[in-house]
Image (cartoon, rainbow, N blue to C red; front, side):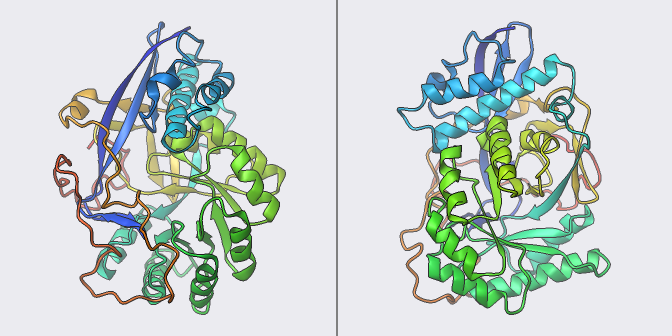
Length: 420
């Protein structure tokens, strides 16, 4: 079997509500999703979700190769991109191609990837993550009520701007999940997305911990600040989670040496091989791993095969436009199906109708760090009821896709994920 070429598509995720974090907000609730299809001479096509940046030069590393040599081809792609720096969007391109290769390899074996990788249980524990910083209290409660209906009893909220607002929102979601769980105490996490300085992080979280139990705080300071993460880790009761934006084992090692991280994370766009290697590194340090991402299908399959998987992130209950995934969400877990490979089907016609191409980072969204991040004097800032985000910035792209179709929050409940 040989790799013969690739194709690219770009679809969208329609959240039907504002989404974002402390760095910014997509008011229209629409985010783009780049897709890479890798073709072979035996008619098997693999699907990867990640990035198109430097795709042609990275693909040159695997063109004409046997796609089943996944681990070796992953390292070959890193070698092909080392001058440009296999980080950021380039690393996501490597991850997308890597995921597609694993998809091909499992399809060729006619097995679902989770079983091919050695997984025993197709159920992967999940926590709810609504990218919810733009939601008012009523919408926040409603959103996590839908997650609770699927059996989820843990939730990660976006925060970091206003300590009292964070406290109120954490209490509110705790009440929603406690009621749904018959009184059982839920797990609560807070994601600051690198918005704090070291001292801000300790002060903010310590204040919250007076009244609420927090399981972990995610990315409290800059991702590479190993010493700063250790300062935060020692100064709070909650665990510290980080790693979703790190792009190689060499970036994890300083964090581990400093003792600054309790839970290692990897992003879905980093690829399956990266996740498996980080999981092994974490296991050697007796630490758990937790995949993140809106479309973490590849990492869900991989999570079934590692001994230290803790829990995986569930963002939207519906897949992007034009994608179908063979998995269910039941009893607080992703339940993987038996389709060979990843079990992802791409409906190219539905995506083609969108007419999208990848564009530059949207200045209104969370992908661009605010100028004053980490430079606030106080842990609390004033917000009005109508101020749904820390920036109140609108989508600036004149070619942005139209506003999302308003899909009821309860649509597809207890059903297999289907094409939107």
